[in-house]
Length: 252
Length: 299
Image 1 (cartoon, rainbow over the protein chains, first blue to last red):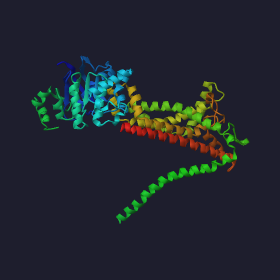
Image 2: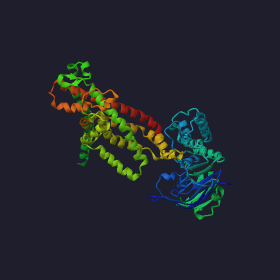
Image 3: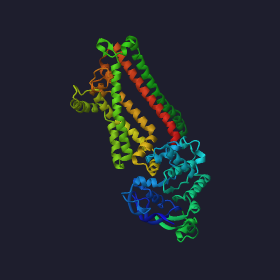
Image 4: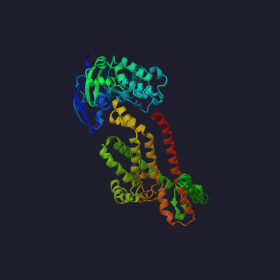
């Protein structure tokens, strides 16, 4: 397997001293679902936010180390952050539906990038919706306000919006934490399809989801990467005692 | 005994609150009634055609109030042209761009500015602004509609900034994050996400700014030159004008009680009252409408 992202000795500390990452080195394989899991405050979200430089906007005290995306260090100050964020899309825990129509939400990213041709925009919207398994539910009401959708639909809309941007990597921060099991199932099924073309990093909202979806898994505890391995391996034969205890529910 | 006291409180306090609530309505109604009683006779004493004429010269019984209305409008319009972009720009800067420490200095400063007595700003207008305008624009006098507009713009800015900033600040952080994560630049995020999401609050800010401007008396009286000239040309901005508020303030003290002049001044007050009523009703209906829409879209 090719490694899409290589993280080398990443250290991160916030200005208010809350959460931090300590010396993380991790390889993320292309075309697979990599799951970052562990109890809250472990640094999973912080790591995700380093990958699209969303942390630039919070008060971070130190960032050290390297993150290579296709061999290029994205932490380099010279990096074009806007282009990076188009390449590395993100889906949040709470669906962030913009105050626009369904179509408006989908084409927003491309319009920002300067795409004006309606045919391209419509095409991208349709592709995104199909990939996110939402097309059949909303095809007749693309001009309704997006907020009218249910929570599960909104979250898939956010996924579709990211996909319409044609990213290479998709970051998902507890994307199903607010969803019912049926919607969660739909999102997970969509991910299994998507991984053929995309590199997916998922912070799951439960160990069970981690075990269900992971091709590759990394266990984080208190800002430390405890163990990383293939999904099956890690959930059946963890090497570290702490991983085993967490996976089996002895703490968390 | 304690039980009895509690009942007493339960009986009186809600009624007291209710009474103070109703009294606000009562006072507005009384003011309106008073204005009507003192102002409406003007309609019978002066012919309607003479009232809405272009000559205001009360000593010779010319009671044309059009110059005063246009004077108020041109000054208000000019002030809003300055205050809206400047105020909203400042609000955006404070809420979206400035670092936290700077914002914590700016916000109280702006609010302090909002509390400055307008007569103090009038000093600035007379001593600094209008001489400068006179020299810079080569005018016979600096006491013009432009000076009034600039000064009133300055007076309206703190109101607009303060309220618009609160509205922008109330937009959830996740909206911005969502936009950034899509590859929006800072400016695209502000223009296409944050400002639309805060729309109703920003509109309220503008309307309150208009209200503050049209009702302002002292500063405007000090700097606009107070010549009751019809102000409908673009060049009127560079001539002295007289506003409705300034006319009432300047002449009400010297008028014989119950005279025609007295009634006409009250009639001007009535017009002013109606204008601010229209502004307020428009504002609240726009805000109400967009709020309903915003609630549908945002909540």
